[in-house]
Image (cartoon, rainbow, N blue to C red; front, side, top):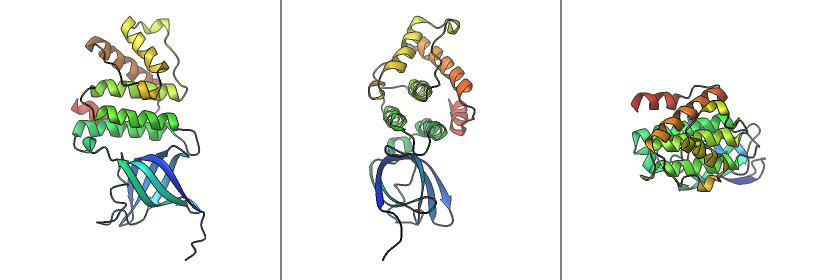
Length: 220
């Protein structure tokens, strides 16, 4: 049967937002390698047993089969390679992850090159699931690198008055490829100062309150 629509496309990406539509459908926002941030409808995905029920949950990473309708994409299938189940089972970890998704939704745009943000999100979620990294360190790295990737980092100035180790850490975050970012640890005093600096940068560069961060601050 002819649908009168464009050909299917297969995009690699991750679900950064999902919301119910009607009784059984979902609208999802995907951060994709090929087309930046896009939204898509997944018909019947909230119906028990539907093959799109699990793939349309936040954190689902893989390949999504979609076709372009007149006003939006429609998802017909998905092959998920990582659901990040560990985050779903960890209350604090889940909210750190949701905070990262909110920042990605804030910064990214449709038909824009968002490969850097997609890589950063994926590697950061992996770091959250690892016992080798403290969640707060992953958070500060993600926040600062997001600002840097989007061209808003002003650089370190003389007025920042940071410890040498903290300044070195920030410089390392700025210059290191995303794939190699999560390869270091810092002392407690450096972590605390890095956190204060990251908070200052976020308040300066992001004109939004993030719900997940508010919850994190109440449970930490």
